[in-house]
Length: 423
Image (cartoon, rainbow, N blue to C red; front, side, top):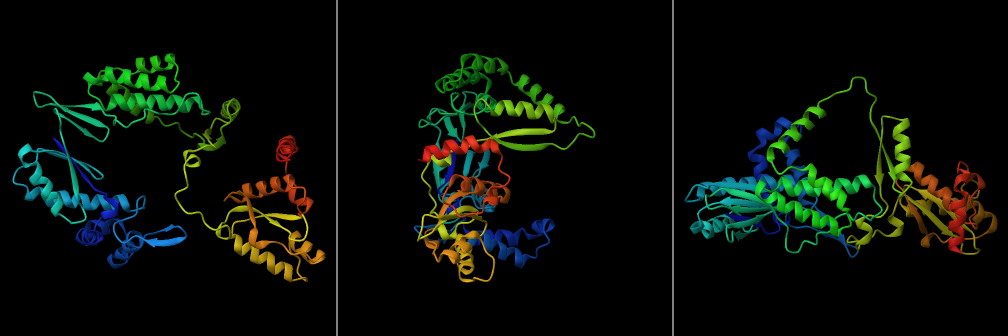
């Protein structure tokens, strides 16, 4: 047993081979599209060969391969890998017992004496696609999340594999997340370990998962209940899966359409709101969303756009001659919105915003170059709501008092606390 892995597959996909494969298999492809071949190839060129990214305020073009996370990247890489396997197999001096692929990882069963020769043939396909090889040690070979174990009879069994560098961290039970999410995390972790392992390893993996969950604060009662739900026999798993299929096939006639609603999770409050909503409106399914995400904990890898090129924001413009400011919102680029404010300030005969009225009546100048972003929101209704909140929080803004119409008095206490915290 060996596993082959391509070194940096996506950034080394030979694009000339992609064009060749599209032309070669066009008869099969054209059944699923009305686009002619020449236009299709132009679209492939546009999506796969014209990739660029921004680094330190410079735009850099990718000269080889496809972009990680691109729309077609996985499909294009899969086409090349399938063609590679079909190219290699006839050139081998023996018959492969088994070959399985997952993206850029290959699992093969072949004679041990031909491992090096096989690796050399794989590396001959294209100079940019080079493979590394991992051989079995003591009849064991890790492959993805599996540990393949070859017994004395030649039978291969599987065990749940964890890399030595694995931290065994998962969603902490003490974190501010819904109980249902913590339960689902524990169930999936337990189920994954048992689904990937043969019956002889399941009891050991139950203990491993139990220790992992306890280290992350999960109560022993929950862990014991989850262990009891999972049987070590594969037959019970199949029965449970067949029951789920039957249940999923049940269709309720004339049922109202399901409505999904996102609700920001606040510990102790959101679960009660969810219960009340689903009790009164049966076709509403409430899904919790969370403010603190992993992306907020890590350094931003992408270069931030200049403020003047940002859109979907609530902004504040300060007056250079007095403490007054103006708060507004825009879906356009800020530089476009600032240019429009500047034109309004120069045109005394047209009615503009309160910003232009202040500038014309007082003879003041606003600092459009140093506009500040107060909040971000792409949806218009939410953006207007946030604009009103920021107007109410700022005592020096020159906005009309009618700009805050529609804000409920329920927010008065919260706004007062925010104002007190800022002073």
